[in-house]
Length: 503
Ligand code: NAD
Image (cartoon, rainbow, N blue to C red; front, side, top):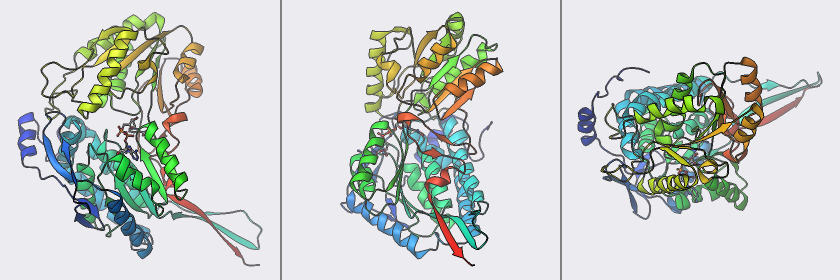
């Protein structure tokens, strides 16, 4: 999308003025109503760009999660959503998509303030992307058919999809609105009820979305939002005996906990979208090294590197390494780190001081284990400690921490390779397997290498190719769920066989 979005500001002063007037949603949303947490507890939500407390948001615990699950179950049993005519579900979700679009500036500001995301991204990517995904799943509702099995002519076996019931969704902070929508759009389209737990760092847009869903005509109890911390509210949802399916996006360590929670409770289905350490493999037969350099920078510096599929490892054929690195460094130097509400800024703060500390710690380990090409830590004089410089390390040993651990920050590790086998081996040498990129002007090589890379999405001559029409998810410890596309509906439906022996 290009140019300003209707109803949005065009400069920092305009956005700050608008932010001053913004009303923050602070209550949980259960059974169609705004409610305080049962214990009355709240949690401050902080703007990482300034350290300012934006609002005190209801902090849900076990009892709140239980109330939300009961409301979701009651709505499911009532059937005014789960058994509604497909055209009715489609109409409500299309209205919600339109409302999201109509509230672009407000929702974009909520995510930018809450998570430090660039306003230029939230207005152009997060909010319009969320509206488009809602509309796409709305349109799917009356177009997905069942099957008839090829049984004997005396029988009729129908294979249909049924909603599973209550879906628990636990999401991270890097794309607060979009991650929530990736889960709830297909879950609601399929007729389920949802209890959504946003990340503690970024609850505001999800709370606003729930109110917009009500306005769009979603019946009470079908979408509930319970802000709260992971080890309390997230755990309660994971362990709840009346949640049928738990869909999660977040770190691999927490994803593993959800598998345990399911085993300890009701064997609910668990779908995991977890971390990554994606490789960007650039071969010397890439004619357009400028395009490759643009891709390398977009792959690691977008959203401050806080992207699950971030191309945090650059594997480049030795003969073009210097030429490519020179271009990458030139672009990285041009990055403008600063106020995320200024549309001219190209890199904002990380989501929190704790997360920035973790990233700086990894940067220090990178400096000790390899050669620093650019950057190297925090930003002196910044208004908060959440700002980290774009950082590039070269000559990184394959066993260095920055070669193996997900940094989730603007930190690129560079490695040289000499042939195709070595490149594939190095790219696949990770417990993760979310995404990878290949750059080559040889059609044969591009296909051959793409086939050998163990990743849910392989982008050729681009990075992080992604669309609502294609499934997104990982191999290995990046998880096994698939978001987006019609395949996402598999997670939220059960196949039912109805066998009629008619003789
Ligand atoms: P996180 O795992 O710390 O938190 C994710 C969610 O889990 C949050 O809502 C959090 O409150 C909850 N949680 C935390 N501890 C919990 C516990 N003990 N029990 C239950 N719930 C708990 O991840 P994060 O820091 O919010 O996000 C960053 C991670 O998300 C990165 O690893 C990134 O790769 C991953 N991610 C993956 C994808 C994907 O599609 N594969 C997309 C975006 C982000």
